Image 1 (tube, helix red, strand yellow):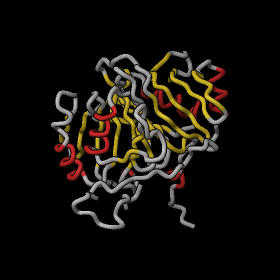
Image 2 (image 1 turned 90 degrees about the vertical axis):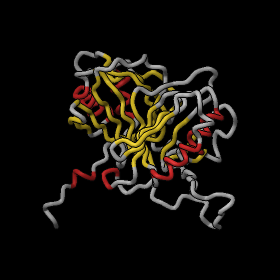
Image 3 (image 1 turned 135 degrees about the horizontal axis):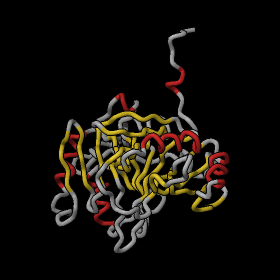
Image 4 (image 1 turned 30 degrees about the vertical axis):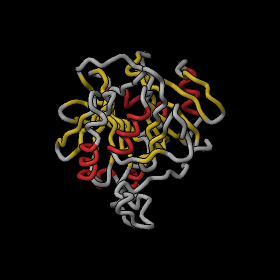
Length: 290
């Protein structure tokens, strides 16, 4: 037996998967141009295939995009993506400039990553596959929220105590940032910022947890359960100071059990290099690690 092995490095915690981010949009056509053509992602072919909602697959995670005229929700922070080929993504994004003219769309390379703005102002940071994010070539390794100064330690304590999620606080770019484990090589990040943020507009994240009832009871005792969805799901919005009850940050969490019918549903991810003029039989699916 190797006494030098740090078994704690393999701990995931009670949150086992960060499944999706949900953002209302006003125009499904622009979403297809941005997410599918520009970023090279895949519209789920089985669920939400109509004109009122679309699910976009990113490895084992998703972006959900219900269409609500004229509403466009904006996440207060950045969604991290891993894409298999940043050069290819940059070329694809350049190809949709005309279609997305007049929107907030834009992109640029910064410190080896591709920083991208969607047509409605949501921020994405796209990384090449990197061992620091685990052995995946396509996925959503983190969602990075901008939170008020002085809240990172207390946010980490909330997730540890209420949701059983291993958390740590360190400095990122000179400011405190809470890292909350939300699955294998996935985190919710809460980065302190002095920049004034817009009011919360209802966007949400979805997580799966193993111990479904204990966090529910703890939140219920604090009157923090916001929605009783059904047997396999409940929701909460406010992240609070454990001592004072002060609301530190608000973002809805759609919390699902591991018995939820959609847990670990296999997602289709296409090979964005496959084209009709240069079609190669057998290469339709993404062949990397997701």
